[in-house]
Image 1 (cartoon, rainbow, N blue to C red):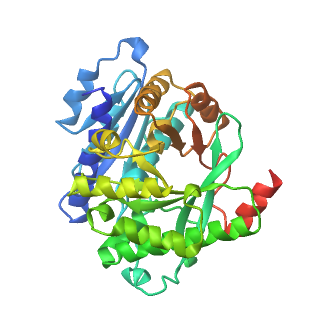
Image 2 (cartoon, rainbow, N blue to C red; image 1 turned 135 degrees about the vertical axis):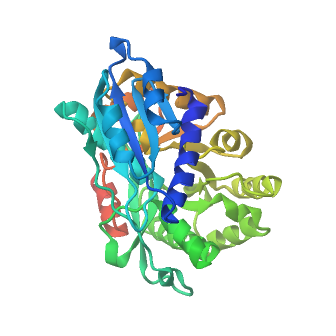
Image 3 (cartoon, rainbow, N blue to C red; image 1 turned 180 degrees about the horizontal axis):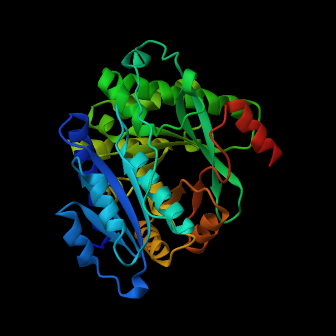
Length: 381
């Protein structure tokens, strides 16, 4: 079992591969999270002997495991019963599909519940996500709406921006990670036009808020990094911003990645073109892809967003705070602002402020809101 930051970054890649195998019907997969009483001399090699080579990473007093096979629940119960385990959670990939963040978040929440209640292994309920590819057909993408979730300056407590999150009209109240929509759009063959449609909607909203003299706020929209391996992508996005009359300095692209894109030199050149135009760039979900460290160093970025899985226990566990502090220090060493997503408790916000994290986003400050609701909340602040 490894306990380094690179090991945390590699874990997600193993999980994605296992979930792909599960989706193909080859094997069942799940994630187990354990809280350990390290003060009692807990030895991680005892866990290694129980999991038969499964991917695992130790983060301070918290351990994460990738479990596969028909007997994964039996394995989880066995390791949860070991001496020194003071909380244990399990999340199993459902049918028809789910996403890595769902499993990681579900297992982490269940582990904390187990620890707080002094209960044995708790299995989280994880819902599958399915999209109809017809939803992603041009020309209008009329099935979708954009909601806006506030981002807060942790130093002042003021709202400083918002992330635009896409939702289906028939499913507005259900949380779905941005990557879920981008992946489904890719499978439909309409990823690029769908991404351009999202940016055009955000630009139109930004221009409207400028016209009514709303407090200037930075709006972020998710964009697959793979787009920038296509010649002319930066030019097309700049054209969308200009056509909408939006201020590029108030727009940010949150770049999602799972693998290193091809033609990295072309990708970097196009991102520089966008920054020269005035747009801000952020690497989203840092810590969930094997290429994140290399891309963080290579790409012309302004910010890095830390995946919500690193916030679990940050207000209650010294090991979790230490790990998050290392990530913040790494981001700052590259001259980047650091944003934490998935903040839900005041204690988490206070811990992030102590660790010099710049911004926070999460249900602590509000859920994703319609444009009208978001504008009202800003005016009332």
